[in-house]
Picture 1: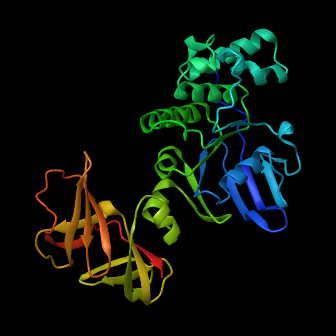
Picture 2: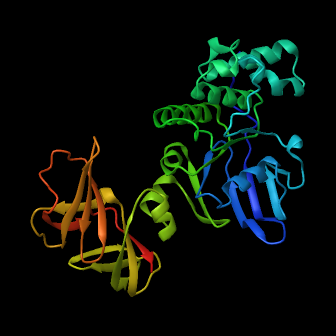
Picture 3: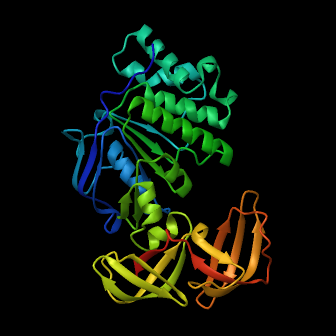
Length: 358
């Protein structure tokens, strides 16, 4: 048999959910969110922001202090984990060391009412889906870290849950293997139409796998949007800094006409989306790959000096001293003739600078 599109995939919604530990430790603070069925949504943020607690609230491993949680049309707010149709892939994999790979994948099915022959068929299909069809009789200790992670994914998939949860699933893998396994997880999610909630602190990982990203800070949602929305139009300084790197510069809005603001930074000026800001002081966020440097002054530039230049294989990294601050820039032109000490003209690509409130 083959695992098919998951017709049970369900939406998840929080309404004013708060989780307090003890008397005053607020882990999740009045959070409302909605996750559509069949999508992969990542909870992203620094340690202690509330993302793992949010995941555990969905799983039923924690109970909310107030608010409500829905999975599909069912209110699961007070249901224990055993009564929620969810599966979780843990950071540690949580495989049974004394069981074979096939036995590990079969384990949860034994408690789900399946016949013995169907349990085996589903477990074999799960291993085949993650590329481990020939590894069923091995012990977990005989597998690499990436293979163990795939066994943990297969064990969760065969249960065909309404919601599949991942808690920092790739943090124990090296960089190259992380990229490979995240691509496999994304492909499986899309092929089976799964609802996946995925927790990570790795921005690149979140951008690569997600339909939507929910960025959390201090138990609150800082921004909720698609990867491109968060990268190209961060809502605030925290998101601009956390999703990729960003140069944050002081600027002045000299005029606002409709939804367009005229913005000036030294000799640079541009018309940008006003984002509900008014005339006065503001901040400009610019991604490193959208900083433009040239040998000679242009009509829309300001002066700078290269104080650091690093070759990192597929691009160059520059640190440029300016009257405002040191800027970080990148360029794919690894054969450029720039050198440390060069005086340069600095401007920004037409698409890229984003206004933030001061």
